[in-house]
Image 1 (spheres, protein in one colour):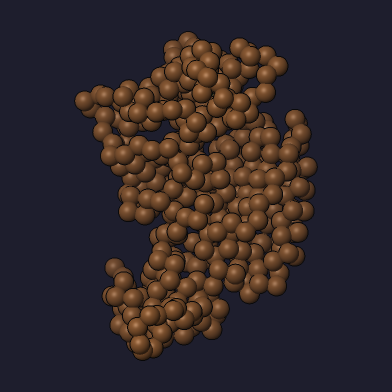
Image 2 (spheres, protein in one colour; image 1 turned 135 degrees about the horizontal axis):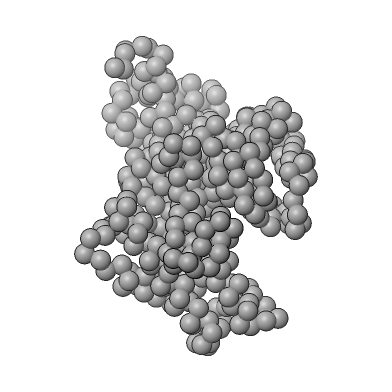
Length: 388
Ligand SMILES: [Zn+2]
C-alpha cells in the first residue's frame, strides 16, 4: 500500500511534472496542471524547485493576441549530458545526448580483429574521461553512462558472454566504475533498441518486440514499460532459435539457428561468395536491387522467407502489439514489409502492427542515452520527441 508520506508524494509529483514536460517539449504551468491533475499551487512549488536546480527553464513565446505572453517551461537540455556506447564486434560507437535525448556528438572507433579485454577497457576509460572534461562546465556534467552489449548480460550486469570477443564472465561495469568514479550501466543491445522505440515512437504501446538484424539477431521485449529479461537476464536470444533442423553450424554449438539465415551478416556473407571482390556497401547493394540483379534478388527473397518463419514463431509466443524490425537491407528493398506481412498469414498468430524502424541502427545508443536520462531525472516512463 502506498502511504501518504509527504516526501514520497513530493517525489512522485515531481516525476509526473518532468514526465509531461519531457513528453511535450514545452508546456505552460497551466498545461502541466491539466496534464498531471495536480493543483496549480503544487505545480508552482515544484516548478520553482526545478528552476532553482536548473533542470527546467522558462521561455516566453510569441503570442499574436493582446495580453501577457505565456511563459512556457521546458527541460534545460544543456544542464547535463548522457553517454550512450555501442560495443559492437568491429567498432565502438559513442553518442552524447542532451537531457532531451538529442544527440550533440557522435564518435566511432574501429576495433582490431582480436580485442583483449584490457585494451577495450582502456579505450573506453580514456574516451569517457575526455567527455567528462569536455562537458564539465555544464550544470550536472555527465549524468550517466550506459553501454550496449551484443551478448548476454546478467541481471547484476556482469557480461556473461560476448560471442564476437569470446569474453566470458567479464566485470566491465565494476572495472569501469573503479577507473572513472562514475556509475556505469550495462544493457543488452536489443533491449536498448526496444527501449528507444518505446521512448521516441511507441509511447502508448504496452507490448513491443524489437528485432535487430545486424551481426546476429537480437530481440528486445518491452512489456508495460519494463524489459522482459527472464530468470538470469538472458531472455530474447532469439537468433539461436532453430529454424532449419540439421542446418548450417552456428558458434552457439547448434545447427540451423535463425541468425545463420536471417541476419544481415549471413546474407552479406552469401552475397560476398556470389560476388567476390565486389564492394559490399548498402549503396552498392541498393544499385543491384534497382537493377534487379538475380543473385541479390534471390538472396533477398531467401532472407525475407527465413525472417518471416522466425517472426511467425515469435508472434505466436508473444501476441505483441507492435513489432519493429531494424535492418538496413529491409529498408532498401522495395516492398519488403508487404512481402513479410504476406508470409504472416497464419490464422493463429496475431499482432497489431509490424514496421521497419525509423531510428535504425542508432536506436541502440539513443536507447542507452534515454536510460541514463530516465534514471537521472527519475521519471517512471520516459517519452521524448524524436528529432532524427
Ligand atoms: Zn546458434
